[in-house]
Length: 210
Ligand code: SIN
Ligand code: FE2
Image 1: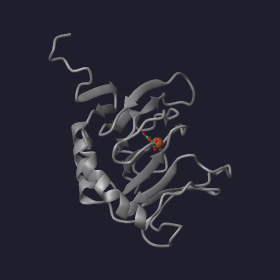
Image 2 (image 1 turned 45 degrees about the vertical axis):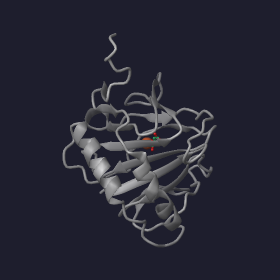
Image 3 (image 1 turned 180 degrees about the vertical axis):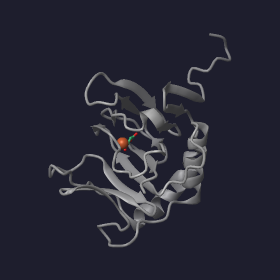
Image 4 (image 1 turned 30 degrees about the horizontal axis):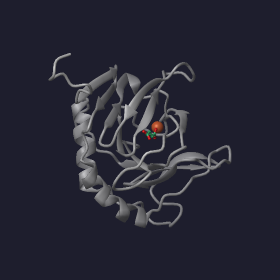
């Protein structure tokens, strides 16, 4: 390896349909929007269909928001906490999502849903597929902000060994096409501190739900 070979190239193909864009997002710009969004629709720990409380605290912005309830998962136009529409997706968020999708080979991505996930150290997200979206031709665009985490990539069926992908502030992972319905999760987050938001990781996932 010579001096100019990057340890983490800007654009990495992890496998067919999965692209990692390192340090792609300007997270200062994204973080500037977060207080307003969460002021309108606060983070909350939703109940799973099994009746348990999720570890990850969540909220949404956009015409549609993903919710988990004892009756199942769905997209709603209204925040069940307030009865109001979810806040709009800020222009900077939409632009980032479109540009990341474009880089990964999905041109013209216009998300109608953005799930906001908040992790603190010790929290994990167990393996699952994102399959509540009617239109699966569009990818999922997932943006990491704050302290690092390890994204775990499995296959199209449950179980097996995870491929571990460390994600840092500003990294964006795009999965779509043949990888749209892959199992994925997040390993227990290690203790770390971000100068702006403290011991937290915020993840934005952009989807085309309808
Ligand atoms: C998700 O699968 O919805 C979140 C992934 C992440 O936090 O990186
Ligand atoms: Fe997911």
